[in-house]
Picture 1 (tube, rainbow, N blue to C red):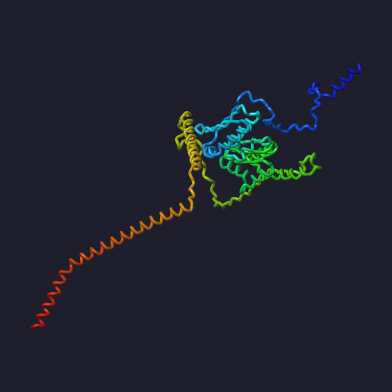
Picture 2 (picture 1 turned 90 degrees about the vertical axis):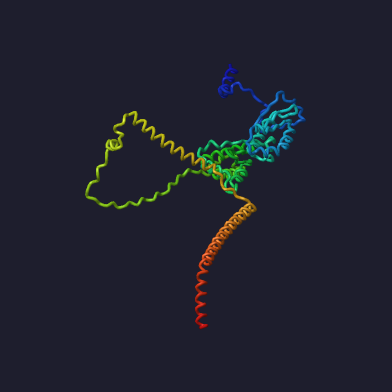
Length: 387
């Protein structure tokens, strides 16, 4: 009877979910469950039974770089018994296990390496993912903000002026971060990636990274104090409230109306306006079709305006030429201007000479009559002198 009471009392203290659990004498407090198990080829593990493979596509602009560094990629993966293939026609990278592979998790690490390389992470940094204590996370930010201009501004906040915000985040979280297009590639520890993901997503949701940076700096200082290690840190952390500061509207200057003793003229009714436009005599179906037509015209105008705004983003900016190229271009322009000026001067001279030649020709035609007259006069004088 006493034994039944003891078992009943023990069952009362233990919850229903843990009633059938057995003691685990090997599971003590000094066991680090998060410690990674390193696997070496000397451990004598049997080769993998099945072949595993992963493929990743890469953008066209990465083709040249990947072609250059691919021998180093294959060499780095050969140590772990992984075969890498680069398909430039299809635009894909593939990794697969071989009989020499001894670590079953290395194929997932190789897949992460390909993802990082396709997202513009340099090879010297991406190859660190093959280490046991390094993990990666590729955060998609393209679908968080719909407006393109707003998305570019918020993405720029992650970098900051001269990349200062990016450096601060990397130092405080102990992770590597690369912002590229619609994704952010991060590398580091699990705890660091958790913090960095929160910072990036909050930044795209209009919470500035500087608030998170301040909190991380305070947490870093508090972690150094052993007395505060097991206490709640909420009282030390800053609490930021969202403030919508409304700008004061300028008062509208009211113009003094001219006083008129007469009441205002009666405004036309809706029926009167319909009678003037002829809408009053339309059938309900005709009215409906007219409304639909007007709505479609408005939609077409709005869509055309939006289309033109979108097309402005694809207009290529003016290319900044090098100093040598700009000098050559200036020289060509000066030579062209000089040639055109010389051509104009020659044209003016030609007209001038033509005019002078014409004047001489007309003068020569008038000279004979004048010369005969003068000879006649001289002959008369001579006759008088002789007499």
